[in-house]
Image 1 (cartoon, rainbow, N blue to C red):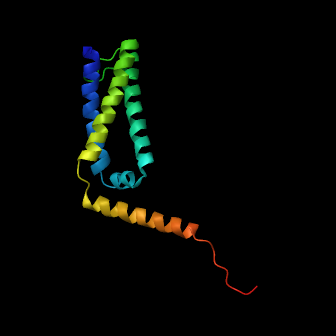
Image 2: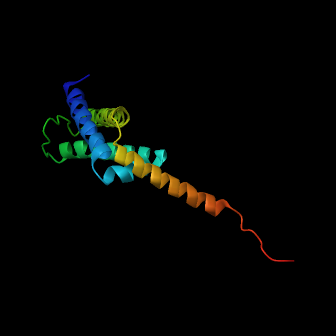
Image 3: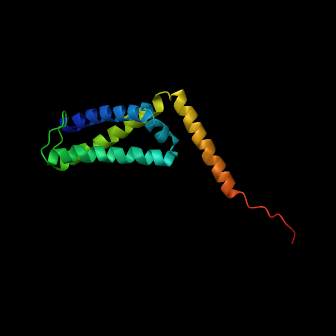
Length: 133
């Protein structure tokens, strides 16, 4: 593995971990984020990871220096950016699953899920007919 790939992966692990902590502990944002369904949360993880890879590779192509970014604007740099995306995802998901959730967030998510379930049950209940035929 080249020095370029390793440097990109290390930076991505750090950024992925920090973003994971922000997703978990920033007030209001974490309530919204954790109330999303699992598929939606995974999509947010993926979009942020790909965005991070595009930023790293794009910075190299436009000669914008990011601290620690040794990616170049060529095929090797593209491989390093792809590796950085995977490292970002691993770090982000590890932080999200490995850190405790705040009790206030758990309560907010529980209330939101309960109200969503009640609304779904009400929509699925067939109307009753009252009156004579």
